[in-house]
Amino acid sequence: MKIGLFFGSFNPIHHGHLIIASYLAYETDLDKVWLVVSPQNPFKPAGSLLNEYQRLHLAQLAVEGDPRLEASAVEFSLPKPSYTADTLAYLFEKYPHHQFALIMGSDSLQNFPRWKNAGWIQAHVGFYIYPRAGFPVKPDDLPPQGQIVQAPLLDISASLIRRRIREGKPIRYLVPDSVAREIENSHYYR
Image 1 (cartoon, rainbow, N blue to C red):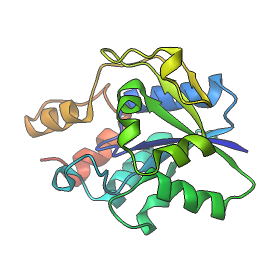
Image 2 (cartoon, rainbow, N blue to C red):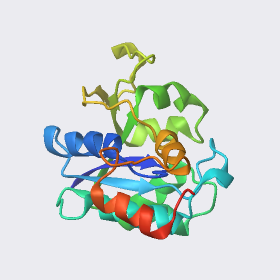
Image 3 (cartoon, rainbow, N blue to C red):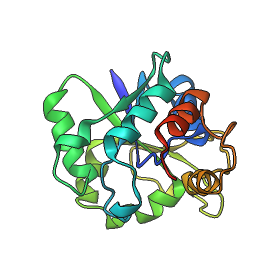
Image 4 (spheres, rainbow, N blue to C red):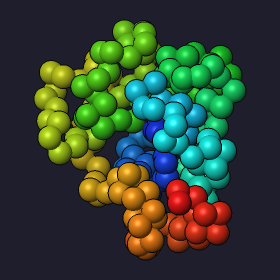
């Protein structure tokens, strides 16, 4: 099985994430897309994050009923902060029969050379890169096993959603209804 790994803080997960994941799951050769909830991204401050299990629960609610999307807690048992190279090494050992690929925006691709063991990652997995505004990608910029995917994008962010919650504004249409209900009922991001 070929699995696309879409890493993120998902703080919270929103329709922008889901549109990309669904597009990759149904419009490429990937069999599934795992939305890997990162407990602590080494490039983001940990203090701004909702608890990882709460973020995982929101992601599970968001993908419920979609057979090709799955919320993954694979990084929860690994050392923090989370490094993609370590996660991949773990996945290769645990799932030797699967093939893995990374899904990332062109903004992340520009940071990729700074990642831990970037050369090793590039040699072992494929890449699906979706262009983001302000971060153009040329074919020469791609890793050897990389391809550009023109996934539809929504210009929304988790920080916008968190701000709207703090201001008492609705988040309907930005996140799935099940996620909005859980955020409201649990008083997250207040």
